[in-house]
Length: 257
Image 1: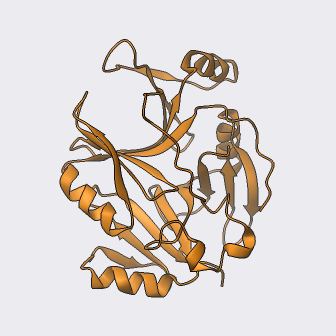
Image 2: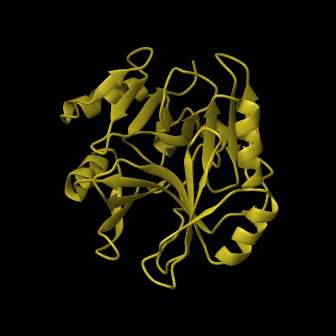
């Protein structure tokens, strides 16, 4: 699928940051979903990066539930200046030291986006998400980077006003890749790094990491056989939502009709 995307505006690496009260339990859970440990550090608080080859998740030790799309930039001052010029409100957050700068933004729907100074060793996974995968490979499970969950498709956000939300994300450098009116107004946006889904619906109320696969029914059955119990049906046996140990959500949806 050939899509013309803008120059990446926010950073060099993107991850979904999730707080965890028990890093060991979280690591074990994501390993069951096809992720592996990539990096870890005890500073400034204990954290572990996990990846499935296409998606990067930053697990940070904290008992307060939190999830945010996060960017790491080697030119953070320039990026911050450009965002302010575009009218984006940023809140500077305390950093672990003077070398690490942290900023936080909120979408019109209260979803958090964070911007941090790039740290040596942080790299973007090279595997194909749904954005990079050739369309002819969508229905071929052998081509999926994550053999357990399928293809990472989007970081889905419920929104109240789709147009207002699109306007915010466009200021961050994302562009609309596709837009639909059924089953409700929704749009998929990307900057070539992140993929964000904006869903004007009350069908779900918190952000969700979403995977797609042609053989999702079989994948779900295999996950159930491993002992994962926090699975909720979401319109059929081939579409479910997992509740993670951090009280976050992961959608596993069948590719196509």
